[in-house]
Image 1 (cartoon, rainbow, N blue to C red):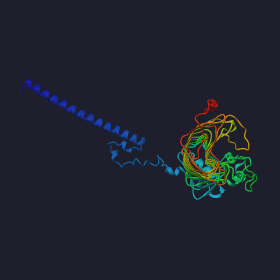
Image 2: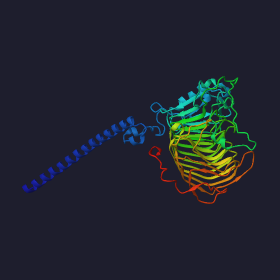
Image 3: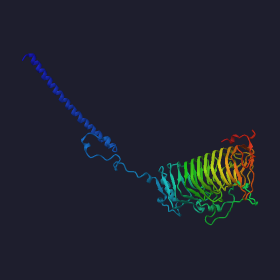
Length: 509
C-alpha cells in the first residue's frame, strides 16, 4: 500500500469515528431534553390542577398520570372546596307565616312582618309573601331603608287589617304603613289592605276640613249640604288621636310600583307618595264610602315622573290629589266615583309657595262625583301652576265638571289677600257628559288672573236633580275658546290680561 493510500484510509477511519460519536451525543442530549421537558410539563400540570381544580381539562399532560382515572366533571366541583348554594328563589322568598304570623285576623302579627322585612331587606330582589286566604292584623309599621337592598317585592295575596281601635296610634300618626327611602320596591298581588276606617269617620272632629266647593252646591229645598260630624268617643277605642293616618305612605323612594291590590276603608288618604321619583300605579283599586271624610284615593306631593293608569277609585274625597312640588304626572284610563274628582291642590295655604307643572289627565270616566277636574289655590300663596292638560273626560251626573277656584277655603272664614299662585297654560279638551249644578266655574285671582286657559270640545248637559242649576261662571280668566262650547262659555275673556298683571319673581318656580 502506498503512503498516499494509507493516509486516505486513515482519514476515512477518523471521519467515521467522528460521525458516530456526534450521533451518539445528539441522541443522548435529545433524550435528556425530552425527559426534562416531560418533567416540567408534569410539574406545571400538577400546579394547575391544585390551583384551578375547576379547569381540569386545561391541565392535561402526556405523563403516565394522564392515563389514570379521569378527574370529576368541571360542572361538579368537589363539595369539600366549593359549597353548593341553595336555589335563589328559596333564598329570596320570605313568608310571614314562617316568622310567626297567625293570620287569624285577631292575633297581632306586627312582629312577624317586621321579622320578614328584616330578612328580605338583606337580599336584592327578595320577596315577602303575605299569603291567601289569611287575614293579618298589623299595627302601625315602618319598612325602611336606605340600607335595604333594591327591588324588594311585597306579594300581598291575603288581607292586612289595621287595628279597630285608637290606642295603637298613640296621640296620632301620619300613616299606618310606611315605606321610606327604598329603591325599586314593588307591592303586587290580588290581596286587600283594610284600614278599618269606620271608627275614625264616626268620630270626625268638628274642626276637620270640609271641601270648599260645598258652598257652590245648593239644594232646591234650600237646605245646605252637610257632612256628618260627631265629637263622641267610641266604646272601642277611647279618644280619637289628633292626626288621622294614611293607609300606605311612601316617602323619599325611587322607582316604586303598586299594582293589583285593593286598599279600602282608610282613616284618611288611601295611598300617598311624598318626595318620590319614578312612581307607577296600575290595576289598582280604592274602595271607601262616598261619605267617608278626607279619604283621598291617591295623594301626590313633592313627587315627579309619576304614571297612574287602569285604576278604579271610589272614595270620600279626591280620587287623585296633586299637591305642591309635583311635575311630570301622567294619569289615564281611570274610573273615578264616588269622590270629589281629580284635583290639583289645594296650593299656597298659609302663604306658602307652590310649584306644579306638566300634568296630563286623560281618558277618565267620572260618575256621581262632586267635581270633575279641578285646580284649587289659597289666597296669599305664591308660585305657579303651568302646563296642564285635561283631555277626554267623560262625566256622568257630576256636580261641577270644570273648576278653577283661587279663593279656596276649607274653614268657615278665610282672610282676603292679594297675592296668589299664578295659573297659566290650562287646557281642557273633550270634556263631555252630564252635570247637576254648574258646568264651568272659573274663579281666578284679582291680582293674578288665570292666563292661557283653552277650551276645546266642551259638551256638558244639565240633569235637574235636587240641586239648583247655574250657568258657567268666569272671573279674571283669560284664554281662548277654540271651538263652540255647550253650554256657551261666554264669560271667558279672550287674549291676555293688561300689562299691570305681571308674574312677580317670587311666583317663578
